[in-house]
Length: 293
Image (cartoon, rainbow, N blue to C red; front, side, top):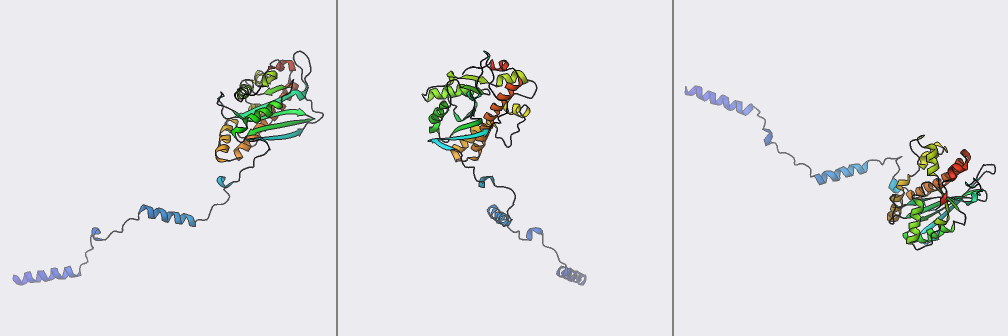
């Protein structure tokens, strides 16, 4: 019996010596995870080795457009352009309701770009544009501020454009642009020339003639449908305040120059719209709204 027990012990010992028993998983030493900071550095190094993408312009590296115009005074620049008018083109004068002719040179189409859309004494015009007929050309003059200190000089320059008998032409200007400019003249303690000028607000005759025909009577809508003018890369007027603030804060000029182009197109459109309404209807139908500013 003891011999059998000894034999069994020997067999078990041989089996233990030859059988491979895998170590449990817990016995395998685990490698520590890579710290997040090291992983982020390694990822950045890998990204730095990638070739830069081409064909996509970097907006931050794009050079700004230079400011255009001549320095009128500290903080204000002036721009003037002229566009030839065909001698055969049917231009003004239309007739006042009393039948007296009005020379086309008396009309001054104007528009402002302002620091806000709500109006009030805290809102100021940082750009004034005007178009008038002069020596068989359409003359476009623009003033814009590069610093707050230039407001007085800008207002004085605009006032110098108004002559006895000047007829102002605007689009919603009787309700917005003219009252805002009057406020600025008063706050700068300057003589206000606007009350002495007759003022034609083309928004009202346009509404009477075309309300319901298109989606609205905004100037951009009227020029597109009525005058067949399509603006290319136009900056909406609602973005003008932000463009001017960006210029004052960061010195970025590209958006401000787009505002200047937007304003130029606005006053040119006013001149063309004035001509169109004169040709399309009896002048007394829409000139009846003209009144002192």
